[in-house]
Image 1 (tube, rainbow, N blue to C red):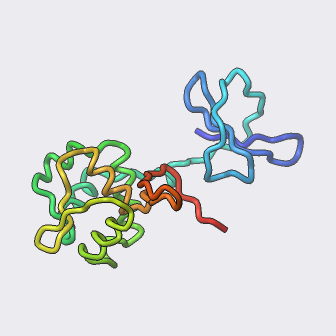
Image 2: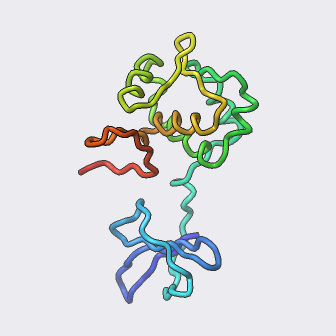
Length: 168
C-alpha cells in the first residue's frame, strides 16, 4: 500500500508501509528509486490517496516461467527443477527479460560474446544458451540478460547491480 504525503497543498513525496514497524519514504523527485527506510514511529502524514504499485513489481506466473523455459534460444535440461528454483527475484527477472526483447533480437553466440566482455561465462549448447542448474549461476545469467552485470572501468572487476538508472 502506498500513500501520498501532503504538506498543506503541495505533495511532497510518497510513503510505502512495509510492515507495522517500517515505512519507505520517497521524495517526489525520486519516485522510481529507493530513498530510505524509516521506523513508522516517525511517520507523520495524512493519507490522501492510495495506489496500486503492482505494475512496477511484475512477477512471472507459473505459466510464464514454463513458457520462458521453453524459449528456442534457451537450453534448460530440467524444466521442473527450473520452475522450483524460480523464487521472487527470478520471477521478476523473467518479465523484464521478455519485455526487453534481448532473447529475440540476439543470437546465443552474440550473448556469449557480450557476457565474456563483462567477465561472465555463458555456455552454448546447440546454438542455445545453457541454463545451469546452480541457482547462483542462473541468477548471474538472468541478471546479465536484464543488463544488471557490468565490468568496472578501473578495476575491470565484474559487478552485479540491483538498480538500473540511465545516465542523463
